[in-house]
Structures are given as structure tokens and as C-alpha cells.
Image (cartoon, rainbow, N blue to C red; front, side, top):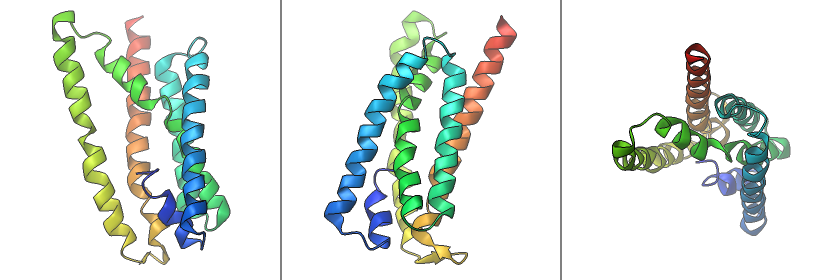
Length: 169
């Protein structure tokens, strides 16, 4: 949802679509950079804790995209990509960590199918954007409440899996 609607967010600010696409490219570059940096950091920080911290970073940036109108809101939106970088591989690894080897293929298949939210949520966000304004704010800003909810779920998942790990040790 973040990458899908960067262009609409920028368009709302009066930025032409070609320039808006450049912000999308910067976002994807930040995601790639974050993947390498995040993987390096995992040598020193527990994956579960890092997932929770990156979820918090993504949530803060998403709040910026919602609450700050103008270019700083767009910068916040682009910055979310840095924090999204390690989310899927971390969730995938944590979820399959204790799955019996004979069930790993099935568990992996279910995790990939669970991405269906990526097919369901963008149309909901698009419908929100079509409203024009929501609670007196531009709907394009307010529509990022949906990714915010997703990031909050990731924070809880990272926290709970980290606390569960601490309990086991």
C-alpha cells in the first residue's frame, strides 16, 4: 500500500507524475538499503526485537504521512520503506523457526498465501482516497491509517515473539 499510493500522495501535493515516480524509486532504494543494513544489524540485535523496532519506525513514519501535510509528509511516506525492508523475511523466518521439517513446505506455502492482505487492502485504501477528505484531512493522508494498523500488528508480533523467546530461555 505504501508504494502503491506514493504517486497519489505526491499528486495531491501538485507534484507531476514523473517526479512522483522518482519518490517511488527513492522509496524502493531505501527498502533495498534497509535490507542490507537490517541484515547486518541482525548480527547484533535479536531478529524479533529488530522487527519490533522497525515496526515502530514504520509506524512513526506512517503517522508523519498521515498527520503532516506537504513535503515532510511525503518524506515520511518515502521513509517507511526503510523500515519495511526486513519485515517479510523476518516474519517468515520467525514463523517457520520451530515448524517440524516435514511441515516446512506447507507452512511456507501458507505464509505466502497469507499475503492476501496485499490484494485486499489497496482497494480499501483507494476507496478511502476517493472520498476527498476524511475528518477534515485530505483522504490521501488519512488512508494511510490502513498500513498503520498493519504495522501495529507487526509490532505486536515482534514483541510477543521476543517475549516468548525470553520466557523459553
